[in-house]
Length: 160
Image (tube, rainbow, N blue to C red; front, side):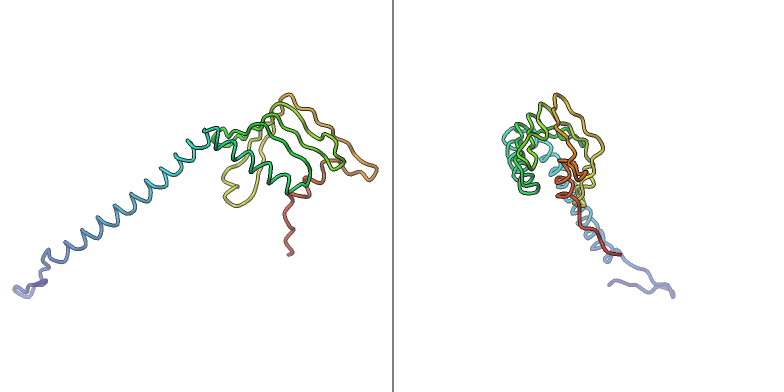
């Protein structure tokens, strides 16, 4: 019996509290498993991005994406990710639309905001160039030869 009546008082026995404790324990275990799984996945990604084969895969994907986006030749010798937010490109070559060298050199370090990437936005905080040659020019129409890259990555303007 769940309730006992004694001298006009209702007394609740422990029969109803046992299932509540069991449900609480199951909920706590489930939450802990979810947290542990997320931590494990983050650690797995951190470890995987240090493996050369994974870095090579990322480099090939980045080159394909950039060439598809800006429609000019792009070469990257090596790509590495220095956590928490440093992207290092080595032996880089970017061609402009006239098939001339736009950027070429040893090392290009880009400090990006990783949290913005979750919102599908790229925020560049700093660019560090080491051994880089950049051929920047402005045409007769006052447009720089790298303007096509900015236009390729510019998002659509929202109408108000």
